Length: 192
Ligand SMILES: [Fe+2]
Ligand SMILES: [Fe+2]
Image (tube, rainbow, N blue to C red; front, side, top):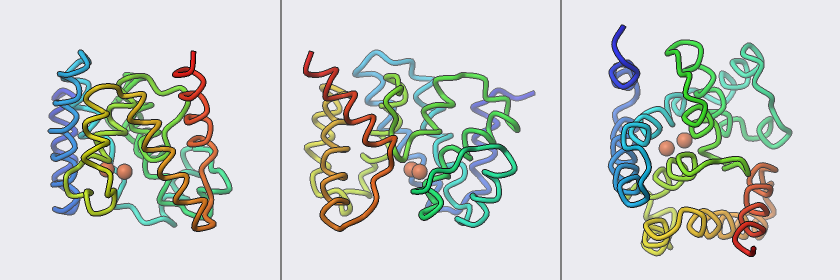
């Protein structure tokens, strides 16, 4: 059987071109962050290539797949099912591509909301996704976030979660509970 990297690359070929391009840009950022922070380059690459494997799946199908695979769905996800593309993607890769690396699984699973339990690899994949240069239009502070991420994954993740949460609160939108807990845990950790 080809290794996970080859299997993932094969899988990516069936994704829409724009999504593939995003995934490969995220891979480049992930490798840069990994080199800077002494994180295994192979795992960083795998995490980046895997993170959006279900990004093109429509929301109603994600809800259906969640039910079939036993992925827990929060109220927030029920209302905005695209948030499930990480959890469903991780579970799909575990079942169909023998994704046995727990840290990689968690990195894919939580790349949209973050989670208090994320390890450095998970934080790296989360941030690399937001640091895709094409997302500069969405995140006006991306240049600053990139500098922060090169210095400290924790500080950058806290910065991102705080900014996005503030925006969502201001708009009267929901905030995923995992994001709230991730932010709380970073503040408590960094304040020690
Ligand atoms: Fe995603
Ligand atoms: Fe992504």
